[in-house]
Image (cartoon, rainbow, N blue to C red; front, top):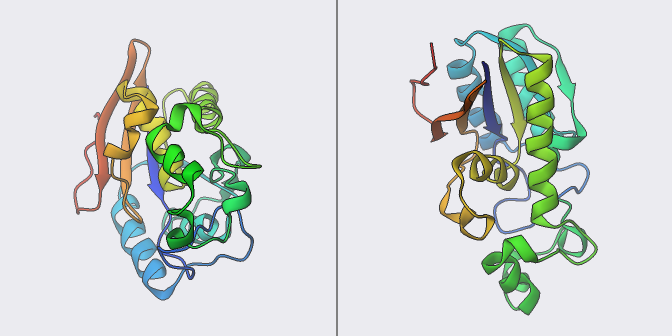
Length: 203
């Protein structure tokens, strides 16, 4: 059994009204640093044996709080990266909501590609594929993956059997922790969007 702690980064300096995507130099805000510190205090009590992060600045910085708490190096994995949001990177949500393609992206995620960016099915394929690869590498471990909201939703949707077109019903808050344990007989989703003091574990 491999237990995955799927951790979203903390709040960043662009705020919630701008699409950060894969833009460089998007760092944690003071609020985000506080959120990451609180998360590290909760997760740091668990028997985590490896720590992985998306290459984005905000995820690496979030992971560093946990690294200091656990004494583990942060290992960067490209497959944990944010969705490639192509032409929408750096755009304001207020502007994007006027676009027909953006509306279709939010209602038909399984069949819509971001202009010059990634399709959601590609995002889901890479994150789930990475988790299954890591399961082979860590067959009896608890490992932490620091990533992004929609990437974590895509993974959870797969293991919960939720269609991508309905995955927005899954909430993944800033610095939240979701837990998936993968056994030989299949996955077990222990919690989603946990921001409390107690984290359920399968042992």
